[in-house]
Length: 404
Image 1 (cartoon, helix red, strand yellow):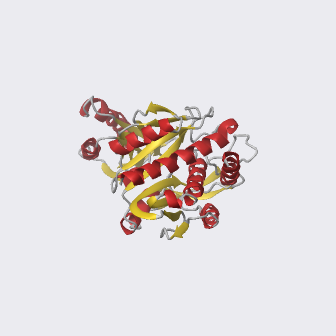
Image 2 (tube, rainbow, N blue to C red):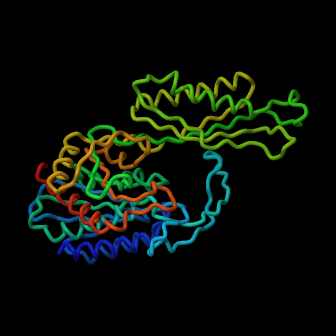
Image 3 (cartoon, rainbow, N blue to C red):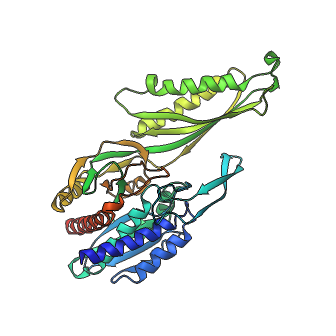
């Protein structure tokens, strides 16, 4: 039975890896997942209410609580260089990316390829494995299991879109679980912890407008470049000098654009970047301080537009559910390590604002980090990792329902 299920999982994993799709464009992936679920005993498809993504349920023999499991299905705009025999078959495309969030100005960018470089194909496959395992055990389940295949985790606010469908209220979901691959942990290992797990993810933009002039006569204009450069430095001082050393925060300027020619002082400079925090109060404080930086430049005569684009909040694991995951992992033979909070983001946090949830990492091996063109789930142990993740999630859900 185990060998048969491993083969089943590997087949689906390789298909998903060969057919990656970007956020909100996961049409082929959605159809594939739905077709697999339709053929799975004991699984009933539901209407998620979005163009992509899938939702299903497994009804236990007896009534009880409602527990959800989430997997993400989208891929990244990366040309795959993994060398896998089942590498991505999806080519790149022209893709419109925003320059200015408020004006909607766009620029066309050639995306060289698409790739599952973050393990979402693994997550999706593991949840298909849960569907197969639990669908055949309905007489031993007290309550309802909701299977959520979420679109657009990497971009486009997929978690928020799912929340806005009202599915949590409609199906009376009480708890939720999710997992993520971890390439620097060996197969057979998980990492879990109560409390903060990953950071809130926010984006910011500054537009600094002065007055353009000839490069030989800067005194006749108002140069935005040195002003924007000073802004970059002053943003770093927010974390080092305005936030308590006992708190954790990151402000990174990731794009600085200005000018059109070597002998023209431009009129405008633009900055873009990201802020990562765990504490909601620190998150609010940073917004206020960044706005104050803009106002400081305005007093010098510049016109400054500051735009804050909030993303997902920090992932915050419920202590009781984290302990449930830890105990069940030990029972299933996993080596359990303590997960230290990471500054990467995860929109699983959108669900934890509604119901208690637990999110954990599962070791999959591999030499290259996530979002790298050579990222792989360790092919030597892929079947074992998939089977282990599916069985672990199945047992976690059954225990969570018993505790409801």
